[in-house]
Image (cartoon, rainbow, N blue to C red; front, side, top):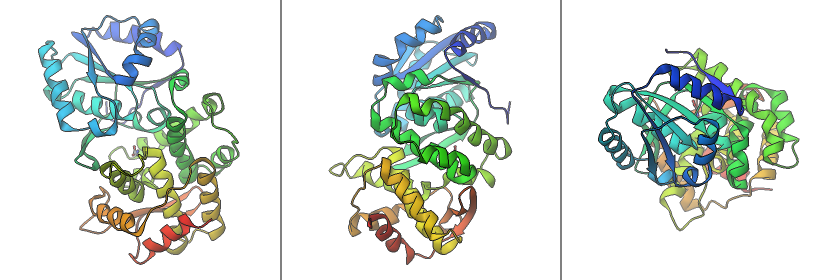
Length: 351
Ligand code: GLY
């Protein structure tokens, strides 16, 4: 049902999931994994949720596989295994698996139920919650998709022990974002963390999800308030797309790109939405503590700005930003003079 978000936490949630799946009497059960979650997470899933599945569906790991070709393969897999409208798909993985698996489920036979079991911090605090499903169109992120809530999201921080540090940090960027747009004291607690480890971030996961769900419940289809969740993403997505297609350049994870986006957009906010310079400096200082700086040349900046034209928040060719007025006070639909972009990159590069 629309406007309901179900999330269960911890190891006991798997037992409840097993009961729920059994009670719902699905005609067939499928689980989607990528090459990472197949190796590192699937056995543990079956240990705690010993459900009989009709097939394990596989996809290659990585943002570059979040496309229509992968969906087509999975639709064929479901069809060949006799999936019908009363089948269910369980997405076990990070944001690529939950976004793409959700989209495959929403479109197969016009929609079958799906569950998300996020295994990365990013998917726990952001991607798997709030009903956004979708795939990329060439280098452009999440251009095709549907908004529909999963039946349930099972969040278990124990998966984080399977993650490389960079992935943990990538999810941490979204947590910092939730503090910046909605909760100054949460921002303060996160920014004073001296070290990122699964144990240190564990207790901050639920509050982060709660900040997001509060917003999504008010505006599930992003007509207004939900846009605040895109803070840092206008430039962040363009940076991510640019680095994804320029394969000789360093690979940037989603959180790494939006961390840069948040610093750039903090600078823009000092000119366009009244953010105090000292707060923009605080934002920059916090992100660069966790995320090493990337040198973005003028050529790269121009390529990134070209990609901004495709941002989903654009209306009638206007590029709209979510900018902060203060910590916890976002403004949506702010137009930014083009001349400020190069100054924002200067601000990012300066120490
Ligand atoms: N990741 C932003 C949103 O779910 O709206």
